[in-house]
Length: 406
Image 1 (tube, rainbow, N blue to C red):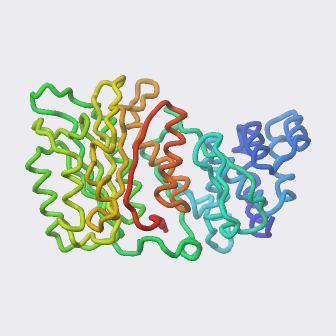
Image 2: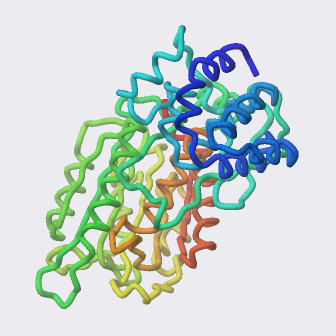
Image 3: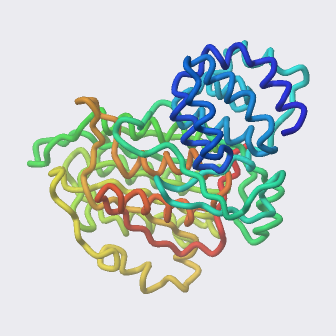
C-alpha cells in the first residue's frame, strides 16, 4: 500500500473505528476480493468488541498490498457505508459537503478510477484487460457490485465514476467521437395518462423516477436533456421536426419513450399510436443528415400495462427495415433497446421506477466509465436473467460507443 493511502488510513483511523458497523460483512467482501485470508477473518472477528474488530482490520489492511485500499473502499460502498468510503476517497464523494473527508488529505490528488473493479451483476465475473489496471493485481480476480434488488435501488442517487479517456482510446482507437460540449442530446417522452381511449393510466411515480434517474445519469455524461410529459401524437411529430431542423450539433442523439404500447405501436396521450420504426426513421441519415455517422440511441419502455403480460412480438417484425437495410448507410449507427414487460419496481409499497430503466442506470453507474454500450447491455441482460425479465436490443452501430464520463 502506498504512503498516501497509509496516511489517509492513519488520519482517518478514529472516524473509521467509530463508524465501522458491519465488520463481518466488510470482511466477507474483502475475503471474496482476495484481500483477507480465512485466518485473517477469524483473527478479526474473534475480537470481543466491535471497536477491537475495527482496529484489527485497520492493522491488517496496510500489509495486504496496493489494491487493498481500493477494495476496502469498494467494500464500504457495497455495505452501504458511503460516508466512510468518502473518507478514503473524497474525490469520489457522493456528498461534496462532507468536509471531514476533505481534511484528511494534505495534498489533493486525483485517483485513476479505472482501478476500481466492478462486476456486471451479482455473481458475474468481470475481467478487465491488464493494461487498464494500475498497480499489481491478479487479472483473473473477480469482483461483484452491490446486488440489484428492489431494496437496493436508489433512483435519486446517481454517481458516475470517471473514466481514463486516454487509455480507452488507446485500446479502442476505432470508437465514436464523444468530446463535444454538450456531448449529446437526450429526449425523454414520458406518457403517463391517456384521454379516454380505453388505455389504463400508468404508475406515475414509476414513470417520474425512471425519467429522473435517466436525466441525472445523462447530465453527468454532459448530455442536454429535454423531457416531454403527456404529449399527443401531433406534439411528438412537431418535436421531431424541430429537432431535425435544429442547427444544434452534438456527438450522440438519444431518445427514451416511456408509455403504453403493443407490438410495434406506441400510444401518445390522445390515444393515437405511432409505429416505433417510423419514429426511428425520422433520425436516420436521410431524414436527419446532421446525425450522419453519429450514434442514435433509442430506449423504449412501451409495454402493455398488465404486469403479467409479456409482449412477445419479434424484433424483426417490429423493425423490418433495420433488419433488411442494416448494411445501408441510411440505417447505420442506430441502437435500440426495448423492454417487453411492464415492470415497475416496488419495495415496501414504494415505487422505484421501471426495472429496465433502473437496471441500465445501475450498470452504467458501475461500468459506464469503462465499458462500451454493447457490453453494458450484455450486463443488463445478465441482470434480466436473474429477475425473470426480458430486454431486447439490436443495433447497426459501426464503432464502439464509450460515454467517457469525466
